[in-house]
Image (cartoon, rainbow, N blue to C red; front, side):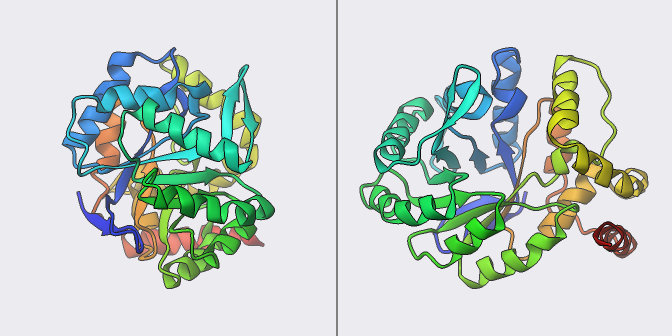
Length: 303
């Protein structure tokens, strides 16, 4: 596993991060398997773990805390998020300063950490971000987080964050379907912000999904309901499944990590084989022919 600095934070993160969310955090998924995946990730060199208060119906954050219990976490960068919360099977929003502070303090207990290395606002508006910049800096000053950031898939919000000195890290949706994020990432790197790539595998749409268990049905249904356009666009990148040197997932991760502005690509896994496949992508170079084919497919999509 290779490691990169996370902007100006002084934190070092693994190129591949573990996303503790979605099916991984749900009670329907075996606790033994879920915790085993985290332990295997740590043993495989993963040093960045990403979760959130609202993930998996509110179950992901405490599950990650249980997975880390008894482990040496001194070298890990654990990130969580505030501003959204799970309520009655839905995700609520509260970006008031009091709610952000309360969420951060609850996360400390759920994760079992004295100080979470990174606290991010989860999908704020530009106005909410501006209003909370000083609150986030205050939390860092109080030692509730070592670094603070913003997770948003709205370019306007990320662009605003780049101009705020209080914000250390941004997390954006970056993958082969999102080449338009590259100028934003370059500006973030120029501003010395740490950049995390969310959805680097394009929600798994690049690889045909075999239905073998309830988790596969859940991911397939989520894709059809929420990400139909991405699924259709991903069909243009089917050639990644035929590369001789690497799998499609590894090629997608290599594409993201070829961007020098990206510190870490955060990807979830609910199978040990998939986790090992993802970790093996660290340090891989995308073959020139594959990169050219990706660019051609991207140009075709932009027409």
